[in-house]
Amino acid sequence: MSDKQHNVSTSVTEGGVEEQDYIYTPVPKNKRYGWIKMFFVWLCWNVVVGDLATGTALGSSMNFRDALIALSIGDIILVVVMIMTVYIGSKTGLAAMSLIRFTVGRVGTYIFSAIICFTSVGWFATQLGFFGQIWTKYIPLSVPVLAVLGGIMMASTAIKGFKGMEKLSTFAAIPLLLFIVLALVNCVRLIGVDSLFSYSPTGNQIGAMTTGVTTVIGSWAAGMATVPDCGRFAKTDIVKISIVWVSGLFFGHFLLPIAGIAAALHLETWDFGVVSDYIGVLATGSGLIGAVLITLAAWTTNQQNLYSAANAACNIIEVKKKAPITIILGVIGIALGFCGVVDYFVPYMTWLGIVIPPMAAVMVADYLVLPLFGIKHDYNYNDISYEKLPLIKWPSVLAWGCGVVVAIFTPGIQAVNGMVATVVLHVVFNLVSNKKH
Image (cartoon, rainbow, N blue to C red):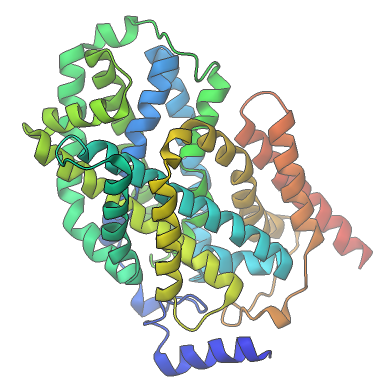
């Protein structure tokens, strides 16, 4: 074992793996959470101001019927893939990028982890921009300065690992659930169902149904690949896992975007800051209280973004303690938020919808599909050291790369095309490789 790996193992033994947030070992069965607490964590991960932005992006360019179809198709695809990746995380107890080690080897893991770290930090920065747009109406500071203050606040719980996130989520879940329901009911009541279905959009940011679906998937694409970071703390019960993940996605990523569309139509503006502020007023009767709840939504999601980014970074550099890495990534995210990354929201979603889904597909293909073809792995989940893994597993990495290319150059729903191609090629390449050996 290399000195670096030896140091990591020693720190885990001496310091206690629980304090290290199980970044290099499976979460023990007796440290798992029941389905109610997992629902709270997952719901809060889903209730995010970015979902309002997704709704306004769809509604500004598509009529309500088409936006609803795009939202429904995208969410069905998301939840199907997420249930599978969460199940893998729960069954093995390992974080997402630790699972990827076995699938793509050392170099492949570095590539995947770097992409996840970059996208998660990017999401963190984007959410800070939304935070600044909301609070600039109440605090006489610029959006960039408010983004910095919000980033410091949101990083504080991520530094404490899953326990810190679970405590905040338990506190925030019920208020956020009420906020979603009240926002949706009041927004639809004001605009009217007939008005929703009869308006004609004037924007062209999203010009086709397939682009709309890809945008929806892109808004949670990173979640497809990283939900094992959360799911590894869940007890392995596929039925309850399915109920929890479907419910959380339905409230946060389906109902909330619809509220965003309805509010934007009523106000006749697609300005996200104006729309979110108005939704807060409708849901709570007070713009300030609404801003607090929307901030809570951003906070509970953004801590997860930074948490997954730190997990991915630790998977590359294997440090003794994760907290310093979380702080460094938080500073980078805050700097990006200060520079206005939020202005590139839709292109960013489209890019994520192309590159990330094939990563989740590689994981699903390796752990769930290959065994159906008689290729069963003997992975030792208690030892993820790189020295026992190949430098790179070409069948998996090539399948992912081809999946990304397919997503870029084929018509239709890019994310789906990329995932299907990745799964098929992953199976074919592994069957050919096994036959040669």
